[in-house]
Image (cartoon, rainbow, N blue to C red; front, side, top):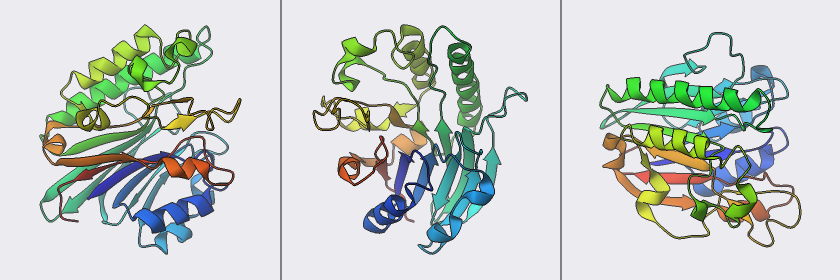
Length: 262
């Protein structure tokens, strides 16, 4: 079973790209971020026509997350617990049934946090603490769990082509990286780093200054797996070629192959 994540940077602008990639790769479950549209504006028919069930937690013009699944949804939950005043659409959670039991998938669009000297950075750190608490609670279920999406976190220097350029950025500050490690230390596994320690593995290239052409990228899109999901991990990949398409998202899909029968 293939589980994927992709920040599409506007689903309406990237609908044709998404359909082409889904047709090419046929993942079983896909978490999408930065939809930039309300629920009713999401082009669900295009994805239902490909055989996907669709769950959307949108927001007009900003944020927005969705899950596409070839398997029916047993549960769908929107919104990260812990702050009832938070109205930003950044979290969606689904449960699907496989022939071998339940699989829980959370799709996240973690706050960017820049500029650091504003309220945006404390919001990012607070959101990460809420995510940590939620994952800790879900881990008590002792079931395969995948928390994937755009984390807006560069975990280590090798996850950036030029880490020195990010030292003052919210994505790479010590507090950000420490909060990410706290989540990993719950018992979660960074799927890509469980399969490869290679440098130069990126999921985002800025639109400016020829970043794509020079491979000046960063790795900020992650799939974190519970122990029960990690036991089934077979392979991880980054569909880098999608960044070379005409008018692409600045992110590319990242996926993990798990030993489930779908």
